[in-house]
Length: 334
Ligand SMILES: Nc1ncnc2c1ncn2[C@@H]1O[C@H](COP(=O)(O)OP(=O)(O)O)[C@@H](O)[C@H]1O
Ligand SMILES: N[C@@H](CCOP(=O)(O)O)C(=O)O
Image (cartoon, rainbow, N blue to C red; front, top):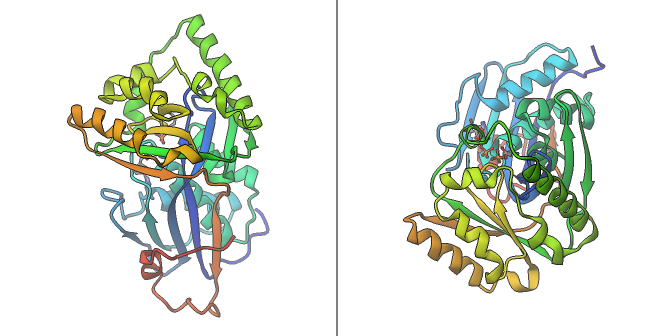
């Protein structure tokens, strides 16, 4: 049992989305993105889970909700009695599209619950818990620490190194209208691969990590190639093969499947990125496949979760937390 302080007050956490793999770094590389989810959490007489906004369709509002379950695991580990919770969730991260919505929910819930009990768990403990829940460290590490992370999990313990994203690098995501669960996209992967494909991925992942750490943007198109998961997942995403193959002819530095997909992700130099050529190419190929995609320019997010603690003296404490979440301007200080 830790020295957990009694739970009181309201926590609002703003947590970034993430993209995993970056091509060859399967289950290892992740980068936080400037797209966010917000979770409010406070003790209450009975549990209530309110979903705010359009992106959370189908998410459960009972005690099976991921945010509620993960929060309880924090109280359990800290050895304190499990409280009923009033939880509000707002997310600008589309679900099951390969932008780490589940990782953001897990990290947001861990950080909110830990804040409610006076941060008795360390960042490392939160990272270990998040990795064990998500079963791979790439998305959760990026959401928790911001920037780019290179991580390895052996099933017992995860280690990571955070890399500051190179400056002058923009991120474009092309989000198809259809959902693809991570589970389904992992199920199409083979049990075994050839030694030459394994060597291809180890070498390219190492080169990519070093290129990102040293700002060698010129190496990205070479380094972001993958033979471990993208070739198998391509069958689930019409148009993906051609777009990834030809994106560098249209201004991208590198093009990959984001996480398990179906979102495609492109890195581009900031000064070239917004001229519309790349977006037009993606839209044209996807339209030819009969698929609607939403494109959105993002930046790497340099920070992890930001936490606002409200006690009863806070000027907004009397406001309905769900109305606060609805307000886009909910900015949560570091
Ligand atoms: N904010 C949230 N609150 C509760 N559950 C969530 C939230 N975000 C995501 N999830 C859960 O995670 C699932 C999506 O996870 P997954 O298939 O791994 O896709 P993604 O690439 O978006 O992480 C959703 O169907 C939902 O069950
Ligand atoms: N390394 C995982 C990443 C899954 O990311 P998600 O955002 O699609 O959940 C994988 O490629 O399966």
